Image (tube, rainbow, N blue to C red; front, top):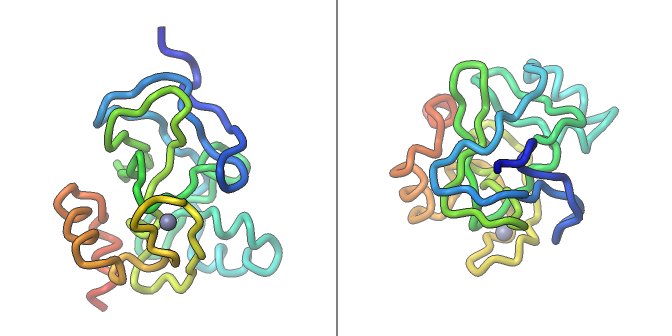
Length: 166
Ligand SMILES: [Zn+2]
């Protein structure tokens, strides 16, 4: 029987993360990342008050972000070999399995897929995967082969692609 919710916040390699409590097949929708939709300006002003919260905000449109607050989305960590990907569908941000996910696997995604060419934020990466990029930032600076693979899988949203065309 599926568990509800099918994941938990647990200690992981880097702090706390989302860990699967059940098996997922590739393409399974694992969760709907909920949060408040806020303006780019609101996130900008959040950097002074609460930088950790600001860093957890996920790009949601040309001028908007999803702020997960203390909801599960705040614990969705990056990996350079991610288990999941984010897909925006209307007002929802879905976490979808990129491969078979087993009980205990961490639900990571590649932050760069949702970082536009105008997002100045970067992060040192300690994911431990072979081929770790070391520093995570805007999608258009991904290694060409990685970017091509992500585009082929539809992982770069149109509103992210558009940020490189201004
Ligand atoms: Zn990495």
